[in-house]
Amino acid sequence: MTSNEIRQKFLGFFEKHGHAVIPSASLIPENDPSVLFTTAGMHPLVPYLLGEKHPLGQRLTDVQKCVRTGDIDEVGDYSHHTFFEMLGNWSLGDYFKKEVITWSYEFLTSPEYLGLDKNRIAVSVFEGDVDAPFDSEAYETWKNLGISESRIAKLPKKNNWWGPAGEAGPCGPDTEMFYWVGNPNEVPESFNDDNDLWLEIWNDVFMQYDKSKEGVFTELSQKNIDTGMGLERTLAVVNGLDDNYKTELFWPIIESIENSTGKKYEDEQKAMRIIADHIKASVFILGDNMGVAPSNSGQGYVLRRLIRRAVRYGKQLGMISFTGEVAKVVIEIYKDVYPEVLNNKDFILSNLSQEEEKFEKTLEKGLKEFEKGISPFVLFTTYGFPFEMTKELATEKGIKIDENEFNEEFKKHQELSQTSSAGMFKGGLADAGEETKQLHTATHLLRQALENILGENIIQKGSNINSERLRFDFAFSRKVTDEEKKKVEDLVNQKIKEALPVTRVELSKEEALATGASHTFGDKYGDIVSVYYVGDSRETAFSKEFCGGPHVNNTNELGVFKIVKEEAVSAGVRRIKAVLE
Ligand code: SER
Image (cartoon, rainbow, N blue to C red; front, side):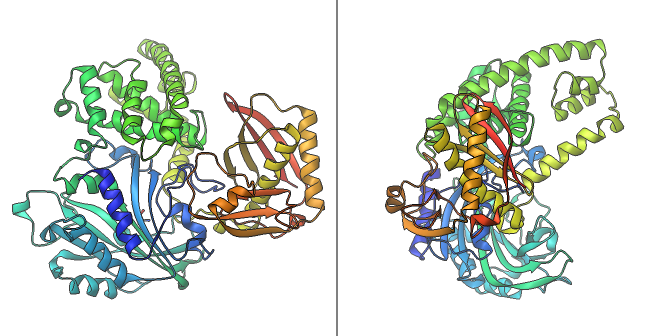
């Protein structure tokens, strides 16, 4: 079975059960301060999980691009990846446990769909604790479907609970589905969580509680279903493969590495897997329509780490200037499903080769100095070696690194990987309070003011909000002058003074496009979209944008708008940071 057949079967199955198919959202979360990347299918849907109405209804299904860096140390084994696709189905206050478990089981085992062997399936359910009771409904549902009790494990929160990653928010028990990937003639009678040959392939989350900051769990009024099935793992098990890298989503990449090094995958598994995984993730981060370039902070820093780590493992195999070639293979695999990687091919390839070159130089110089005896810390601070690499090099040489010196930086690094991997439930503007809503509305005003003052269609390249400031990236080829900045500020402040209402409408995609509302070029949208306009009527509105919200109700809630910085982020992309005072 091909990856495309699985995607189509999955979406088709849930469509048949009344779900609307929604496109994958960007990998770079918009206006969300809590995570660096989209880490799970539920992430872009947080506002709807918290009660906002979705224009396509209460049942949704999708295939979402995800990046997780929390598991980066596990990348190199047969089943963990930095970039992966998550198949999901969603109930926003509609069906619940019985329906979803029954559908999951049917999809996994019916010959019309995945046709997996019923005898190789095991599941786990939440065992119960002081916060929430044993999930007897999930247990009974599995039992009634014919799963033997020895294959239904009752496990604690650590295993069978999802969210919130932050201190508070919606969360709930889940049920996980495992497939025996060992010898089919030796399937153990009972499920054992410690045995890696039981591979988790699907997780159905029952979002039924809200956890307060004080740690109290109360039942949510809108109960949701969030399921996530890893495409790469599913593809491997359906095809009887014991290694995700042997599937069509990876094997051509591995083969190209084999060809260019003359080495065999069997002998160099770890290095080849890491190169394939990291270059693939880099292609998707660079190739996103909100794509970012390597830098020293945020998403750009994660990207830099991925590219540099791939280059270092490439060096181990004797590869030089190779990232572009590997990236081309990745683009070839995905260009039909994710056309953005083809459309952004030049950006992907030029950034990869620049970063590789930069790093080669750094490595050469740094390694020379390191041989001469400079400390790991200098290597890190002066030569810009990534922290992980510095640590790895020091360990290889048996040098103990001075933990105190590194502590500060290390903390920074940890925060970074936490924000990029966890926060799966936190997140979403719905959770982020009044300031972020205000800044979100101010971002819409800013975009339109830039368009009016600079006299060009402003193409958004990224947007990020935390409780203090907004950050807006847009395509523009030169510096914005002080005079222009002043004019932009004045225009935004004038619109704030005019006390314009902010209104959300749901329109068909065609109608929405016809209004001239601003949207991200090249992004896929659902058939019905929500558009926010700022102004007294849709016709006379100052700003119109495709957007999931949320926003303030009136611009008079915004205070005084001030641009604090304007700078370049990469060739042809400018960044504005602004605040409301
Ligand atoms: N949120 C859950 C996960 O990521 C199910 O989609 O596993």
